[in-house]
Image (tube, rainbow, N blue to C red):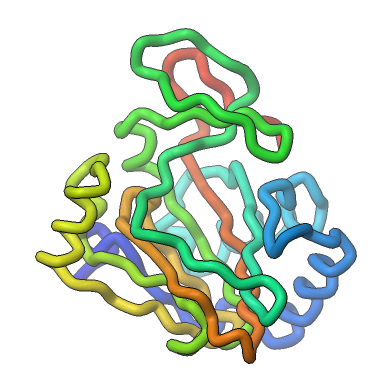
Length: 219
């Protein structure tokens, strides 16, 4: 089935081993706290990597004219371990607050302003997860519900029902692989075993322009 039907796809060996090592070194210099951060796109190495992902032959057609608007770093290891219940990614980083009936769910994270995006925006967005380490079943991989992005925004009960009806796919990966998914796709993850390290850069790409006078937060 296609990406448009499934809502996710895995692209192998997008980054070379050397690129993974170099990227991990840059992350170490940024010293992300508590196993993650949302502020990496402001750093030049991260912006350069985002541009190279957008131009990569495996990803260029899928991303089209989308622009990188955010990069999160997630690490699961012996000292940094957690689980994530089933959910959709609904918030986007914006430059300033705009009053409109369609806009709600305003919040601040790491000093940045976020809002729940309208469905029309969420349907255009793509998350690009770059694996810097191998991620097997015991490492807390992302679990996704195929096709659930087509159901729009879901509450907890509907999300659980969709998972029971459609089942889950565990997205294991090798270092250098890239997992691409729609933010509206239902996804979750378990804790890792604690005996390994799972580092992921989670890029968010969106349309160049936003409705209701919103603007993307500057990187």
